[in-house]
Image 1 (tube, helix red, strand yellow):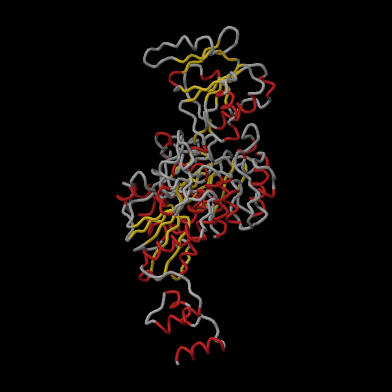
Image 2 (spheres, helix red, strand yellow):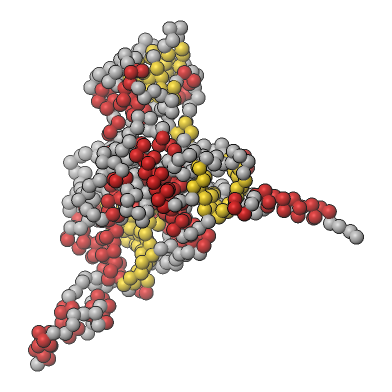
Length: 618
């Protein structure tokens, strides 16, 4: 009897591989999430609401372990604004930067702390309660590594520190940015990292301190010690970017920028710019550390600096980067380029650009909106996690993107409600937007919330919806208003005339009307001054200092007139008595009268109304 030995062996090898990949049945999950920080817990919550097969692996024994140590000086810089004058939960989330989304009203950070910038341990307690009260499936003390994707099965496999094997169809990395970014230059080892710096100001009493970096961690350290030091010298690669100037919350926040005062008011502290390749740290015989800044062309150091660059302590505060070490060499995700190089590179639905089925949540997904919106922070990525969840629901389970369908006469109210209350499009401005599909010749609409607008050309693929004509609602800043050198306090920063709405500077709504879906080419050639490809019609609402768009004329009337132009119909609201009068005196009545009054949804007849009819008929 002849046997096909090669074929038989290949089948055996495949069988063994499947056993190794899948492990026992209890170690396979449809979704594996790595990291039980806020990003991982938020996505886990959404998956749990749909009863999906998921697990979250956390290498430590507590959720949100990052906050057990960081920020080093305890105070988080995310707003905990407890009072807004409103009871609307969705609106209040615009000003609550720490809470995750859930159905449990008790799981809001406002119930855990009364201060604007809470202590980091508040978040540890909150995230622990979030996981426990909602029953989110987290396996603690599981440190996975050797993550690889198998081309033959399409599955991901990984092991933990005890040799247990796991596998999954979809892998989501939500590990945060916990690996210190350590630039290499001569003498870099002489600096103590932010991750190890002393938090006792007494250790810096009467000392000269060099701080490498100029982000929030650098200024956090300076803020806590500048009252006891001889002087602080801060060195960074580029100019300082102030968050209230750039409108990016990851730039320097005012709560930490006291050193700017002491620098500009000549109080011995200094701030300069120099790239890492010009830096050289030397340890002197007396134990002090000398900083040399050499011109990269001449190699010489200015004599104006030689006797001033001597320090007792050097602190490195150069940020964080994504940790690729858990991945096998065959499955290393591609990283971003340029200023995004510390983040994994993803498309607009947060999938790796080189490893299909590998997704990112939380801070790890920030490459999509780095230095633009809030996707690197809880108040932003709680919404990008929901966007990812909706995409996975459609991609893997055929569930269409959630939507609301209604007659076109309700569209104005729907848009006004969203732009005045919704938190997702507010925090993730110019990244997430609402998509309105115009149906039945413009008589009906279907409303999709928090769609990743850079995937507009892939609407059907991402949502399962088809579209001909559509409107996209986004919030955006003026094209020339934000930037490190922008004067955001100029007297004309807020406009009042609706005719100048296209010149609005502050955050304001923009509506893009398309007669058909933009193409991939359109998305690749977006004009610099626009958020989306050039539309058939573009409308701006005038900005408002209080970020509310409810003025009867400047906002509501102007928006209604734009919608009427798009739909070519009267979208005003009418009382039943007005509809009755119009029906008796005109051949056609406005759309609202057609949909409501003429369908028997008007006022119940009364003697006064009957007398009015009799008078009209005489």
